[in-house]
Length: 387
Image 1 (cartoon, helix red, strand yellow):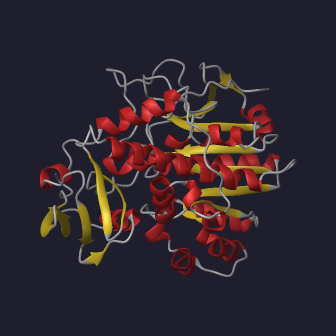
Image 2: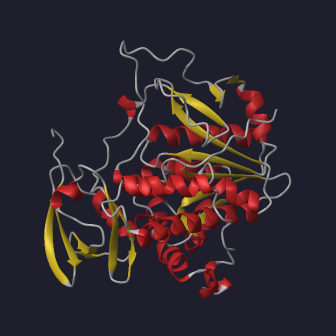
Image 3: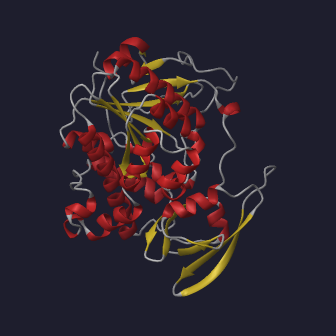
């Protein structure tokens, strides 16, 4: 049963989660769910209900299936785990790919699946907190599922340093061996480029900074191509590779690059709040799983500084600032270099994400920044639980 394949540009790149951008559900004025939106139901992009057994059976015949997520949503990771279990029942030869870790973490993933590491040792060996700023507890049930069934885990990403190097220096300047033999990305559709430009300009005080916009788009393409390459290399007839990644990489992101690499047998799936009166984003997925009201069961929202940052030679560069964010109130500006946070030297964007994520409500975090050759300190105060 082929699924509809209507894919147009991604709306919210996952790298902008630091800005606090989410696709929040809306409810009807009377609090009731929208008609035809029953929790626990799969739907095609036109709203047609899909049979779970038939859908999973069809998905198991693909080469690649992508499960999108909002990184900080516990319900999304529970849905991913349940979907993985269903797919594994139909296709035991299953590989799980993770956006969360770069290729350098592959030995740690292999050791985890082999049962050689406990959770603490795995997080240290994979350098999880440096590579990925989100709570590992959101992902550990999936990692345990993989180890229990001895399913290979695949690191899909590349380091921010390599991503920045490819985006700034160009692909020809980086030897193939130093970029994991990843080939240059296929040119993005005009609609994808336009949408990324709109997202950048809507959430950057440097809206007219064409150089920063070009870096943003190029970095997104590197990210998409790197993950698509790893998924394509792992795929084979009779084997299903399932990639877990931010929903912003779907649409014309990773699926577009997969097709350029010759992988046509692919599908993209997303969870969607059944209480939402907005239709699911047809352009991002081939089918949606309707969630109920999971808000009471979600952990508290993590603290946010409200910046989009990229790597810099001696810190992280501010590329965008969220409206009405803590960063905006602090007076941070696009182009600032954040050198230290909480006394720790920043070497990559995930360093800042991890430090911010560990701040308890009401805490103070000093930031050392450089602007126009001058260095000074700002003190970020995160809201208390009652604010």
